[in-house]
Amino acid sequence: MKKAAFLLVLILITSCGKPEPNLTVTGTIKGIKKGTLYLQQLQDTILVVMDSVIYNGEDNYSLKSELEAPEILYLTLDKNAGDDIPRIAFFAVPGIIEINTTLKYFEFDAKITGSPLQEKLNEFKGITSRFNDQNLELIVAKFDAQKSGDPAQIEKANQDSDNLLKRKYLYAINFAMNNKNSEIAPYITLSEIYNANVKYLDTIYNALPKDIASSKYGIELEKFIKQRKEEESIQ
Image 1: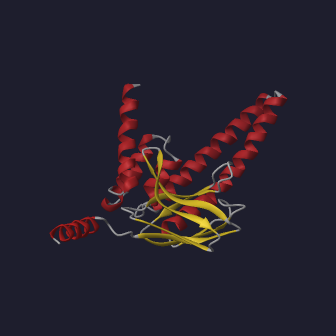
Image 2: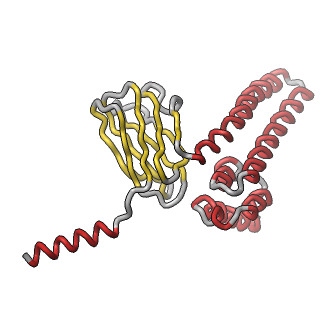
Image 3: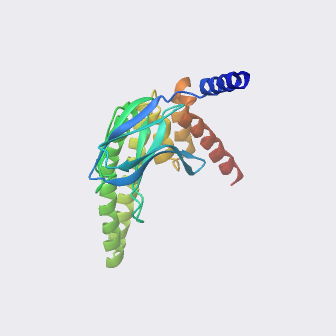
């Protein structure tokens, strides 16, 4: 009896020390029959599984985990087919996030709801996709200019490319500054304009309120700026 009581107390202590999941990711994958779905987190360049579910004909899935702070997580599908493993990146926040998609176009058909930060990220990507389209056009223009051998045409193509890059950086900087009260600001800075002049990174970081500066990506941005400054001081 004493041993059983001791084990019961031990189990209670262990369960009390384990945090309750504050994140639920749920939804459907149209067309799937079998496979394993993973909720993953990036830790030191390695994707770590937070939760998983084996698909065996079910309509819905539900994944749960403890999320310490808003961050980018990954919904990864292993179809056991030996091909590329599709993956959906999304900006997770505590609460319930719904991700509905299809087996055929797992990443591209994803509809994500329940995360205000994902909405902001979608807003940003909606504009930057236009810059990317223009960049593809300019790559073709630069190729044609070099093929023609016309110095004036080559110079114009290079200038147009530089101007587009400046506009893209300026949009990202303005977006980060206009959303300085959100975790999206340091994330955009790190992921989109990390190689911009360090003074711009400094300006964005210094504009962040304390709670955002002490968030996951706020801390990473501070470390990155410090590293950039150290590297530039050596050169």
